[in-house]
Length: 132
Image 1 (tube, rainbow, N blue to C red):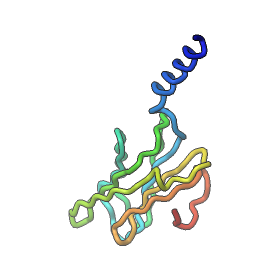
Image 2 (image 1 turned 90 degrees about the horizontal axis):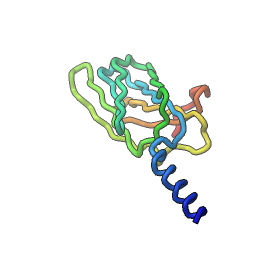
Image 3 (image 1 turned 90 degrees about the vertical axis):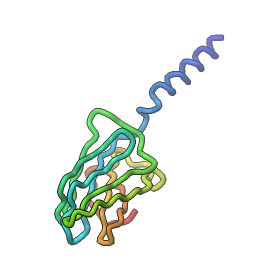
Image 4 (image 1 turned 30 degrees about the vertical axis):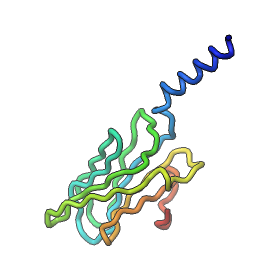
């Protein structure tokens, strides 16, 4: 009986805390285009990160504070061009994430063709070549 009770409590604890299980990570966005991007936003789940204006070649980051959320399956990256056009891109995140990194940086890069790529690295590691 105690074994079943202990098992039940363990399962309940996992269910209650399951949405908090994950590893700490940061969100970063970069502009690899030759033009200014305006109102750059990365969103997923209940989170929305507003990065504002990004000049060509600029990267900006945002840190999760006091929470560890699971990596999203997909994120939405949106921005406006200098001409006022609104662009929205959806990109898979979790399926591409490497295992074994302790504090992850998830970097979304708006490429020259206005598509978005996602890259991962350990926080504190140098930004290497752009490869997934």
